[in-house]
Image 1 (cartoon, rainbow, N blue to C red):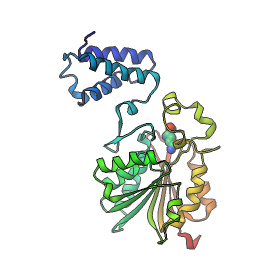
Image 2 (image 1 turned 45 degrees about the vertical axis):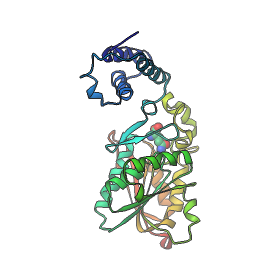
Image 3 (image 1 turned 45 degrees about the horizontal axis):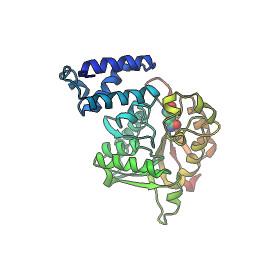
Image 4 (image 1 turned 90 degrees about the vertical axis):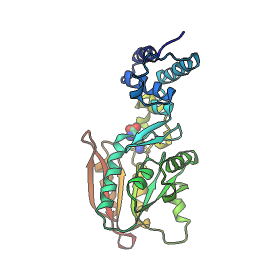
Length: 295
Ligand code: GLN
C-alpha cells in the first residue's frame, strides 16, 4: 500500500476519530511532522509526496500507540512550554500550560526584585520545565533543581543542556529538601518553586487513560487529600529561604484555600496570594517567608 502524505494523514485522522481522540486532525499532522522531521506547516507543501513503505509502517505504528492512549507528547518526544521545546519521556510528567502561570509569576517577581543575583530552588523538577525556563528567561539567576527520581533528573539535565543553561542549574537527586540538609554551608535561596504531586490518591483512577496509565503516578499522587507535599514544603522551606524569600507553588484547581490555610497555620508566612490560570482557577499560591529565626 502506497500513500501520499495527505492521504496518510486523512486516514490517520479517521482512525484517531474512531478512537475518540478530539484533536485528531492536529495530532495526525503532529505525528507526520515527527515522522518526516519537519514543521507541521511544511506538510501541506509536500502533500503529494508518496511515503515509502517503511515510513508508512512507522507512521501507522505511531497512530496505533496514540489510539491505545499513549500521550502524543511521549510519542513525538517533546512538549512545548514557555515557547521552548522540552524533551519528555514516560519518566516525567508532560509539562502543562497551567504551570506557565507559575513560571511567568516568578519571572515577573524577579524582574521587580531589585536583587542582583537570584538563587532559586525547584523542588520536584521532573522534566525541568520550570527550572530550565527560569534559567532561560532570568539571566541573573542560579537554579538548584531537585528530584527524587534519577531517570526524571536525566531528562531535566538533557533539557538544561539543550537550552544552553545547564551551567546555571545544579541538578540534585534526592527527596524534597533532604539533599540540602546534608550540605554543611548555610544554604539559602531567594525563591522556592514547586509543582508537586497534588492529585488526591482516590482521584487518580478517575483521571483520563492517557494520564493515569502513562504518566508517572509518583509525580501525580499527593496523598489522601492531595496536600501532603504542600505540608512539607510549607514546613521545611523557611530553613532554606532568606527572610522575605518567595514561596510559590502550583496547586490543584480547588486547593488554593487549603494551601493558604497550611501556610497560615505554619506561622512563617505573610502576603499570601493566589494567581489565576486561564480558566479562572486559583492555580498558584505564593507567599513571603519570615525567615526561620522569626517564625
Ligand atoms: N496538572 C496535573 C494533572 O491534572 C497534575 C500535576 C501535579 O500533580 N502536579 O494531571
